[in-house]
Image (tube, rainbow, N blue to C red; front, side, top):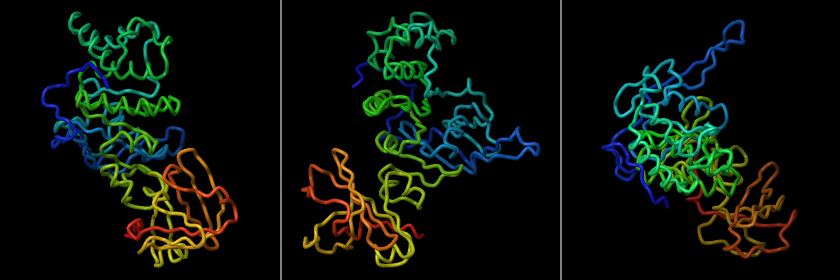
Length: 366
């Protein structure tokens, strides 16, 4: 847990207390002119985005490449101006306000540290440009480095740091200016898996410590679910769903969200009739499906379907079983190995039974 603190601006609340909007997008649209086309074709990057992020939230903008999520972040930061719509920060219309006049800082995936400066000088640089007194700069820089646990490397240069340390320097540099909003564009994308997981925990702790609004843009569903209080799922320039992470995962608004956020078994047509027993479009999360050997009894009220194993994948903590229930109908179950007595001889071609509760089925038809 960070031991230091960079004081937030007056009036900032924690996520648990958040009631006031900090970022508001109202009908925001962004169209880019394709300069390489003789006809000057328009490319619609964002279409009609309505979004509210509250004071003190750790919020994620999640979507695949080309979904418009980074364009939204750049418009909030002031690096791009909307073609239509309004952007407000703390209730103030900033739609046409330049980036340097917004109370916002941005951390990019590349970090953009000055290689010829020390860690301390990198963090202090923005304050120096703004004319902050030297004694105040040094105090605030020391506090920021203490918060991200980098006090002992203040005299080093970026090339002497690990990837995780460089990421924390970029974070300290952004926070030392005490913005009301911190925007992070794929901040952990350059790190390996273990370091990324470690930094997710640290980033969440730092956000809780400083209490300001964090908005993270990411394509990584696990990262968004792990880090954020709420998230917005983008697809093809539009917002598909906004809500608490658990709600988006447990109750996806449509097939895209069910497929993109985590992993789902999605059934329609004949597959819906085989698996769910009625027509429509339905999703069942693999971790809510149990695997039974022939002769095993399912829990009362469970729905079952007999199938033939197509694939078994052992992943350490979990095992994933995919089986064919009917021609063209497959179902996948994911089991926690520590909680499941999984038979060693279950392999391709073996008969099994899948079972799940009715409340595990989410209706996507509406």
